[in-house]
Every structure is written in C-alpha cells, then in structure tokens.
Length: 79
Image (cartoon, rainbow, N blue to C red; front, top):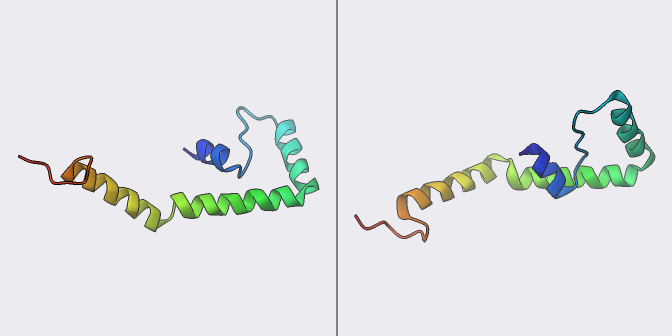
C-alpha cells in the first residue's frame, strides 16, 4: 500500500531492488531540486492526513461496519 500511495500522490521515489548508485542518484536529484523535494514533502503530508490518521482510519472502519450491518445501500438488511 505504501508504494501505491507514493505513486498516486507523487510524494517520493519507488526503487525496486535498488543499488547504492540508484539511491545516491535519487538523493542527489533531490538535493539539486529543492522545489521538487518540498513539493513531494507537501504531497506526502497531504496523503498522510487523508489516508493514515486516526480520524481517516475511523471513517473507513465506520463505512465497513455500516456496509456489513446495513448492506451496500446503508439501509438495514431485512431478515
């Protein structure tokens, strides 16, 4: 899920099977382009607040419970 969040929100780099050279290259590019670094940081913060806070988790949990208790439409299930 972290990789998907990074890709969808443009808040970092995903390095599959990275070498020290590719990690160093990414770090150098961020040091050279502070504006892009700050933009990615802001995007990461926004993604975190939207998806990973206690409040966001509680909202998702509430939706799941309502779906299971009341069905997809939110109405009580007839038994």
